[in-house]
Image (cartoon, rainbow, N blue to C red):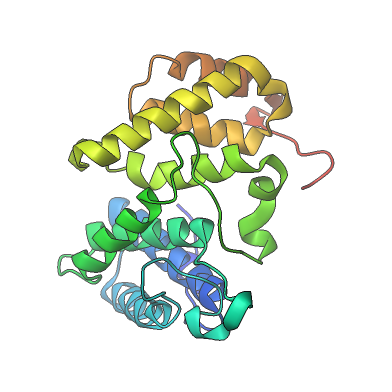
Length: 239
């Protein structure tokens, strides 16, 4: 078990990206402690309050036509107005869905989650999810910034694939098409794609039981290094 893991729980603050950096750990820590039988009433109450506060704060960065941006819709004016971010909206939707799965009472309005997924679906161009907005934090950029469209597509597709069996036929079709596109990219140019993005693609292909899932797993395992009994992936030059 991990000792003092609850010390990672912190109240949300800052912009739409920073706010989610504290929301997300509360959801994942809550899930870990609940599954391992270590969730105390005190930690549960603290995590719930963080998620509740983070949810309300994040809604202030939500655009009127859907999606989220770091500083909200009203921070842009005239010709400089920016669209909501596909990457940030994917992050938000993933965290909100997890929170609702964990807590007995609905913490997040189901209509908000459904609307966010519908907005994300509209950013799919038939092959990739497209980023029409901006995201600023290096914590979100990482491999997404390095690999471009395929990384953004993998990141957004995960949000749908993790709930694949319950998706509408339209959203399943988007996931299937995106998965085929990413599997094809692995076949033709895997060497140009970072370990981080390949691992996301591998995860998606296994979630939906895609025919290329074993190939993706072989690719990512071939890149691994075994040291002191652990399998690890080394990033030599950072992002």
